Image 1: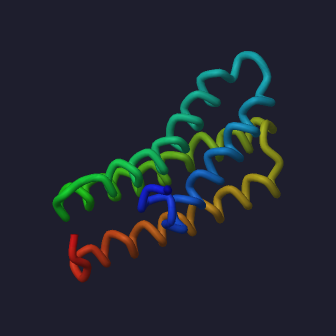
Image 2 (image 1 turned 90 degrees about the horizontal axis):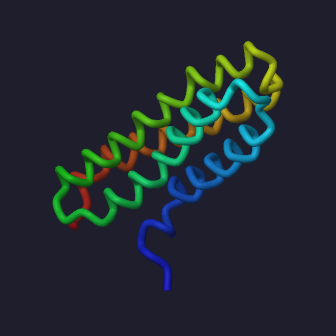
Image 3 (image 1 turned 180 degrees about the vertical axis):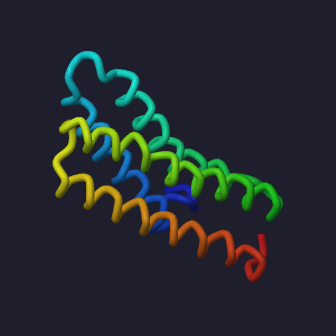
Length: 120
């Protein structure tokens, strides 16, 4: 039996994004651990906070965790850009990952905005 959050498309997209980031950062050369670690942590924070927010009982708590997840999407942008500038990520891959982040951020904004219309 699945948890309710596992059915959310935004959660599924966030897990897919994190998985892509993990694959990508595994190829980073020695000396770029700091960048890989920051990007991995931010990417994993997105689905983690969606899951944790979904487990909360109040709308305020849910909104808070969904907001943190949305912030983590933004947090992925700078290390992803630096990885592109350093040649660790090809521009095509960078653009694709960034488009995924934009989609996840929009979906999270919709989830946050829709909280007021849903019973808990």
